[in-house]
Image 1: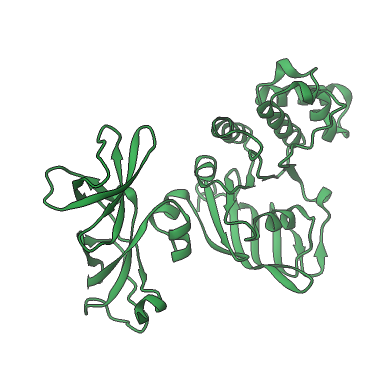
Image 2 (image 1 turned 120 degrees about the vertical axis):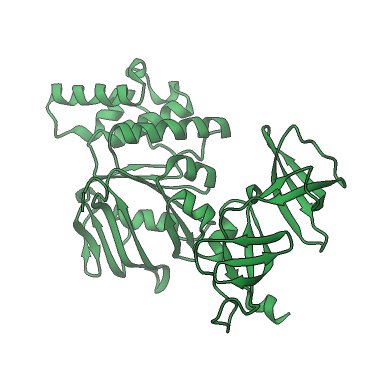
Length: 367
């Protein structure tokens, strides 16, 4: 198969287990990041994101499983290659720049094996890459937060690491700067053909920067996939609930790929799971359907209406919370020039081109 279509992974994790004091923090992790791609780990606090990053970097040993970087096993039960031998670059949350060194000296710090002119050439190239040539002689305290982050990135990229690890790299910046710098960092990584894996708690940041995103929960990797797939085809109910916005509506299975909900019939392209204890679709089984805000369209001509319960203005659009006839609520993404009042009834229709269903939770089924 063409390697340009499916490049070999720059990092591959199989059956990884990491624990502290006998308690597992990570359990049974499996994923691979293709060379040249950017991966991102998201999840709630305490899910194990940073521990995984530290295990990849070599700061914590593994209890079971393997970590391979660029085809070489660097960690397993009984094997622990030290961080400096793994060919990894690191960008920390607090940048960790040396305050007494100028920008160019910070970038040159990891290039001690290069001769003088070669080192200077590499430093100039890195500062040009991150757009800070004019700041070479300044000290870190003379730079803005975004500039300091780019210096830290240039320093990490200077030794040409096989893999760059970034732990909450934009958390100290304001929202607007985070978004802009995130786009810049993605372009810098792509321009330098650097593979990277970062940790963030910001889903939008992950979607904007990464080629692949991993959702972690309770020390396990719920799904490792492209952002589109995570949003539209979540593998587990946790991912469906964690990623983006959406609601679950009860549904009756009409066929192997079709269900009926309060808003009408939905037809998908993959077989549907039935509720616990049922193994034949098309027999009136019950499931729950995930509806995203963009699956429900405001349509004044539609005979189906819903009451506006809440609304959130986002500039170009509103996210309306709408109450259906049954009392259940759905979300709808509506252009901002449709400014309806709370309590008003508006016409809606389904506009979903796929069906995402999950078995009815056991507790809900029992009720």
